[in-house]
Image (cartoon, rainbow, N blue to C red; front, side, top):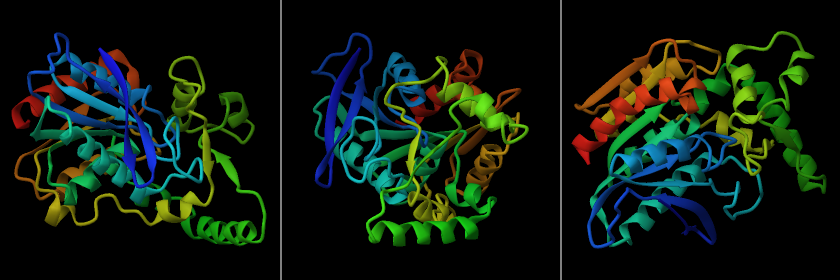
Length: 302
């Protein structure tokens, strides 16, 4: 059972889908989980898949489009702003606390890829969140730091100057439009090939997953360390899911960094054997194994 809802972040509305358990009864109270999508994604893709499965397990699950993206409001469009992404999650929690059928003391968060980084980050200071789950969590600071970060920042500065002087905003693709296009530049790395297969083919594509990124977003993203101060502030129970078929996106390393760094005394990490980053977005065997760990975890701590 699903219900389209929205909640406010600052002056705009955030579009969301509330996934409800079978036999839902508004007079009962339920634990709730905020499901946070990856960069370039929308609520109907992998975050929605996990939300649907969590609802089937008895939770109310809320998947939403990030501000500036999908059906959500906010300007400029296609901005990937880490601070606002984290604030989206806080606002989702605000919304859940207004629902009479939600137990405000039993709210958790689950994030996938970049959403996993945001989920961990918000939990540092948002203590209404009582349990944190991540699936192939990615830390922007580490990911961009392994590219030519300084060169990108120089380009961002030049682009901001150009736009201040009247140039049109530069919009770049998150991924190439097809594997064939990507191969024009040489061999395609495993994670990128699988990103294309998920986002740009019928497997996972969605009309509102636009593949558009406002280029100047990279200025904030490069400096965003999602796990900063986790060794002091990430106190909630934590469950980290990674796959051991490691690609360039680095979520295997990020998952172990988050697990090792978090001060939480109740933390676990599970490695899905043979699974790559994008297998844990939607492939039945990998996601079923992930959920077989996450559902008991959230049941215990929410």
